[in-house]
Length: 152
Image (cartoon, rainbow, N blue to C red; front, side, top):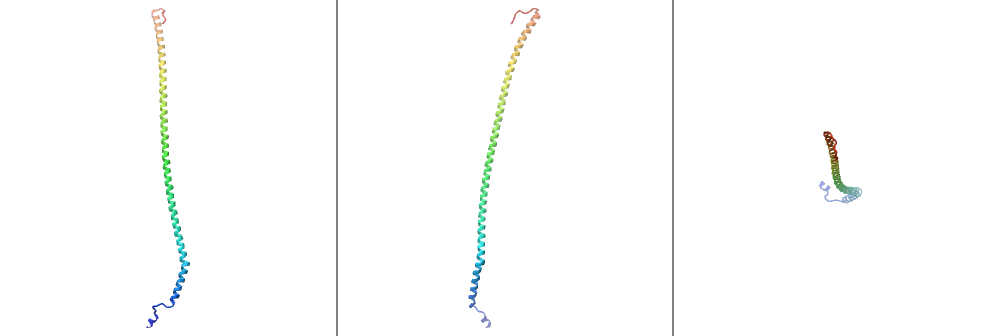
């Protein structure tokens, strides 16, 4: 029975001391360790969430700016193509106009040369006719041996 007397199933008066020591240690640990660590964890969490939000905002802004840039680039590309097409069309029109003017000038020059050739041909024909008459008169005088008294 000696053993049975040493083992106590019910708490004795030391339980109060143990409870007080436990509560003092819990309060001291709470004030000195747990609260500062929880504060640091909460601060890190809030900073991380804030940084994530900033990152998301920057990501959205950069996507928006990229989209705006691409739209402006497309507009500029379309405008450049329109300007290029306009310049090409104007060049074609100007080239066509120059060709037409050159063709008209050459036709006008050809007509002028034809008129000059016609006038020269007419004059040469008249000169030949006069020379033919003169030659015929001279031949007739030589053949007949007398001068012609008729004057045409």
